[in-house]
Length: 420
Image (cartoon, rainbow, N blue to C red; front, top):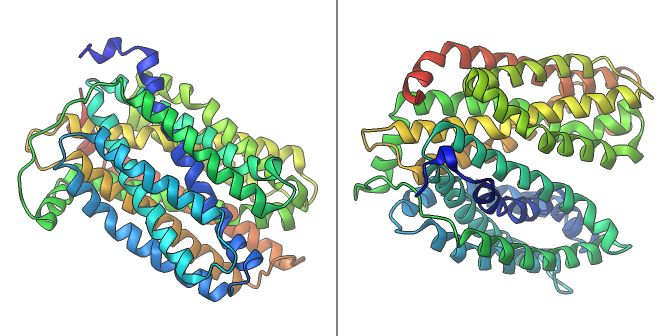
């Protein structure tokens, strides 16, 4: 394999392209499925909520085990190719349910989708870590993956309304578009080398997974990643309420989201460049600092502040690019430097994916009940809007500051294990 300092851009793009269909498949599960099954098929909100919660808990708990099992396979590509049909069938069935589909259909298809998604995404991330052989190449590979992923999010958000006048028909067609996207990505991956694989010790799942958490640098990085992830997920859970009731421009919700994700994708080269100049950890700290400033500003905007909030979306999108590109690249460096054999890529990214999913659940579990406790309900005016602004902007600000402080305090331990 070529030295990765000479890793061609084409190889980075061929690796990154799978990020598009994976993100394309993930967004409808979180955004559209609840409305489709509760609003169009007539299932009760409590039933849909209970099924989504149960499947997400099982999905998150399974991720470390999927990572452990994946480390014992000879080929990451083979596991990704195994996962994609599960994901394709699950997405098509989930977004185009037959007449009379009920809770059993929803639960079964969610299990199929989440298994396929986890198996593909864990091995995809682990392969990227194993493919790079120096720090810069690992950052480029992660940035390529996340850039394509952001494009997939924008497409999945925009296409249902463009494909059909009614949401159910648009979602049904969206499910079928996933298939050619996945096939193209699989063809692109087929020309890549296997990458570096460490020797796997044949031990039971829990000792292997506990061994990863026993690495103090990995545990420190995972803790910072979790805290920072909750800070990012809180505004994601409340942004549409904020746009509708604080900015009072519900009609521009899609526009603001598009600005956010496009800015995140466009800013990825900036984070790659900055990581070369000052190091990944300090570049990540810079991204956290940018986010803190943006959240402080967001807490001050009000009705009709469309230009100001558009700039906030662009700047927070730039900060998002740092959150997407730099932490997984730091983890890839940590894996590359490990000589103990305790850190296996699949197990580490299994924990990583578990934390990512737990962040979404914790953020919703923190933000939405807090809004209710403070007296906010959708459509509210007056003092309730101050509560919404506080939860949308100042809660993430505090959490970001805490994550930055933790990263600064743990920087020497992490840098000592990731230095080239």
